[in-house]
Image (tube, rainbow, N blue to C red; front, side, top):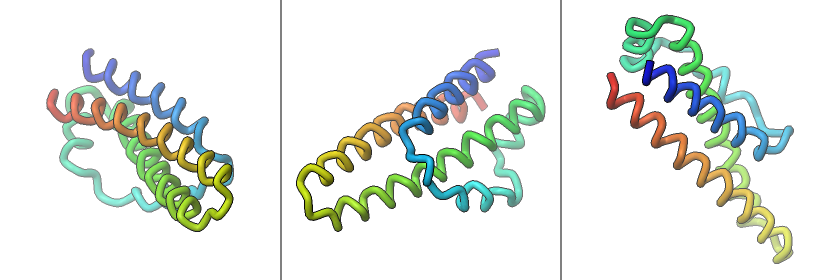
Length: 114
């Protein structure tokens, strides 16, 4: 039950993070995750069911997508000449990075439960 709760909180946090990511964010990285499941995914599938394993895989895909977006924003920030644009980009990067740190705590908690 605790694992399901952690996955639910992680899902809600990712939804909030995804709102912060512009709609033009690339989805290509999410499709690259269709390979073999890792050990943690298999443990989630066996302990709480394949539905929650699917939720976990979706969270991983979103995490990789958001990581790619942060890298893109950082590259854009480095190229930005206008201080206002640079400041806006830094604010977005910081906001998304803070959410990523929170999500990592949820992933760590899930890993610890397995």
